[in-house]
Image (cartoon, rainbow, N blue to C red):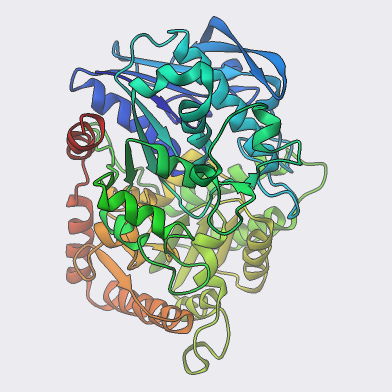
Length: 526
């Protein structure tokens, strides 16, 4: 088969990753190519990916967008791992380039509350138009399947269904993967420069197939893709079941208002849940480090981040102080907890929320967790994202000497934390699949996780990790604390049992080969 994959991230090229989506787009093409399929992968260049990678321009795509003619440059990029059946591309246009609040290149924008998704929706609406025109022009050859990932690519299916020049796309099978249903990219149909009719003037669309079920005057690219794709896929079986039902609690999993569309997709046999895989290269060795070497690696990363700003952010200043204090320890603490995560509500809501009065005295879950390990443990947290949650973690680090918040991302630091921690903490309120728990387990680090989504499908309590439950927020936080205490008790007082859990974590396998076999049979061939 000749397959085109469209996504907003691709860790198959240098600088192409923000979150777990990048890992998926990196790992799927080699697994498909190993089965003899030809795979094209295309993402935006964001103003820099074609510059920092070994690339060559292969053409220019011309198209109409927002009522005028545009051109975008297409580059073929040399990926991290060469394969004759894989072509990696980025497309460049001025709309794609943006920077975050640190001045770094950014994939995604943070728009004000009165214009949610405005910048990103325009960015990806243009991207989808450019690629739709490229496919129509035969740039990727005769395609058998187009695989689209998350709401960013939903505009492609809108064009496929309604644009008069894109009708030929309907002859190509389309697959839509949901990685995070909570982000839907909702924008108005009209009366905004970032709206469907502004991007595609004159488009003869059916609003019933595109509108958000709650805000009927808005286009919902996630909902549109679920309704219009030939096959819909979620990245774990448990998540595929969870999203068929309304959320039990605010900020928690559920269909996010799209339950009726998802149930309809299931009933028409268009919805499948297939667990993401994890790479297990034969050459992989966990990056074990001595305690002082680990601290030095983390300190160097924070110093580099400091150099990007004229003033030192509070998070970096406090992290440097905490790391200096930890360097005075003669040996590694008895319990090292770690997290590598995007700093967003989904990942941290249960850390910030209080438990019951009896369990935490109305303190946050993270407060109680840190109090429990004080004197014998440390917690190293690597991540960046939502300023509100970054500030929460910064404040916690200022209060607890044994909590280090590393406010940024470094691949070397991430690999070091996966390989050198004792317990990986991942209390997501919902989790479509998750990759961090798989990476930590691969290196022999058990995980403390919430019993949802892909975490439920990968971590077994007392066997290869620790799982907490609960029906209300208070109950979830309380069980998070209890389960953390259980893990610490085993680590500190039952070494043989702990070693067995670690061994079973490292022996657990979630193979892309198994996932790809289902991709081809269920999604691509239908």
